[in-house]
Each structure stands twice: as structure tokens, then as C-alpha cells.
Image (cartoon, rainbow, N blue to C red; front, top):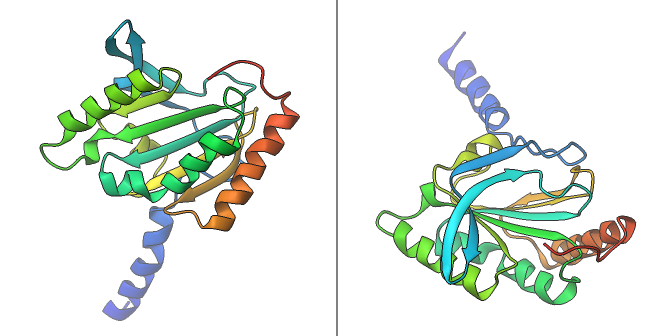
Amino acid sequence: MSIRTFVLLASLLIPLAQASEIVPGDRLPDLGIAEKGELVLSGDEVGYRNWNYPQQPGKVHVLQYMAATRAASDINKPFTDKMKTDLPQGAFLSTTILNLDEAMWGTAGFVVSELKSNKKEFPNAILVADEDGVGLSKWQLEKENSAVIVTDPQGVVRYFKQGAMSAAEIESTLALVLQYIGKSGGAAGTP
């Protein structure tokens, strides 16, 4: 085999090797984060506990997994802002997972401090600190990016996108969440 043929074959296989573990129409693979994990509020103190997906079967779940960088947090801010205003709070689970392993050198402490402040400001928010990037490798996500995943009440992926969502994608995803909230009985329970 010539070098040229080998390079061509190798370049075709790279995208397959980097393909995500998340496939719309399939069940979202289970994930457990033990190093740091979910932030929990106890009085004025914020601690951690193991976090696992799935959580609260029977609920629509919107997950955002992102690198712990300002750039990654801004990628889908338009979507998260619209979620806060256009979706009935308490009718679905919303989880934000920050990959601390991708924080810029020397900033992880600042990121954790900001996460703790956000938990105090929004005590019902599900915030997860992924110390070792377990989710990035388990779900085979792109580095230095932000991913949005919507699962139905059975844990089946109904929407998955890495990178910035267009205005049309934001609107169709919000409509999708509303559709599945309606199918699951709506606003029972709080996140």
C-alpha cells in the first residue's frame, strides 16, 4: 500500500474514531461522576456528592456538558437564557456539567468558586463539577466545546448538538422539550 493510500484511509477513519457515544434515538449512556460531582447546598456551605445519570427517570432532561472555560460557557448561552424564560421551571430536569479538567491552568479554583456562587443563587439548579473529564471521555464529546443533550422521560436522546445552536435549532429544541413535557404529564416535581 502506498503512503498516499495509507494517509487517505487514515484520514477517513479519524472521524469514525472520534464519533460521539451519544446517538439520537438511542438511550443516553449512563454516567457517574465521583471526583467532585454534584454541588449540594447545606445552609451557606456548598459541598459535593456523587452524581449519576440517569436521574429521576420519567422526567424530560436537558443536559449541557461543557469545558470549564468562559468561551465554552458562552457557546450556548442564548439557548440557556431562553430555557429560563420559555420553559416551565420544575417541569423538566436541567443539568449543567463543567469539565474542570479543561479549565485553563490556574483557573480551576476560580471556576469552582463561581459554581458555588451560582449554586447559592440558584439552589434548585443541578450543577456538576467533573474533576477528571469523565463525561468527556465516556460520552466521547469534543474538547473545548459545549454540548446540549435532550432526553425524553425514558432516557432516549431526542436532541444532541455539539457547538453553537442556530436560532432555528434553539426554537425547535425548546418546542421539543415542551412536547415531551406534555407527553410526560408536565409540571409534576421540581428539578
